[in-house]
View (cartoon, rainbow, N blue to C red):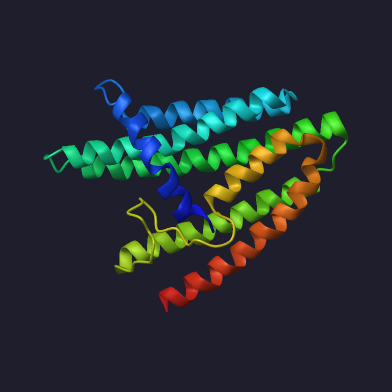
Length: 214
């Protein structure tokens, strides 16, 4: 819901950081891999109930997640060789897979830490995972079919995949995952509310995607 505004807000600092690391041996894919490793470390730290460190790692992984695409667009704009387009598509694939891995791992890590440390129930976190699964299926299927049929959607922002924006988007996900790490003692209650929002978003995406493709 807030992704368009957030992308505009962070565009300038991300461009500054991309300019600072724009050296030949740092590639967008390598930034993506580092972000993946840091994100997985956040999940492991949460599972170990090292909440403050997990929060730092989570936020750093999300900065890297935004930085890889910014660096890729900077390189593409500066290049005259058409080959970077293919590299960008491969990078987009790597980026979305890394996002799914990190999001799922973080839910699992928080669930382990909250259940062992605070006696939280598992099922709210399972609901969140189910909601993520349905949302991912909806927008990935839409993106594939839209690409094949030449469809476009508003505010696609030249991303590698057409993203059907609804209530729960990337910005809200980053915030909720951070909130889990700040308030782990009520993580399962946050997960319960979040699962409802995510499932409502999934229903919206299915309806909107079907209507756009008719």
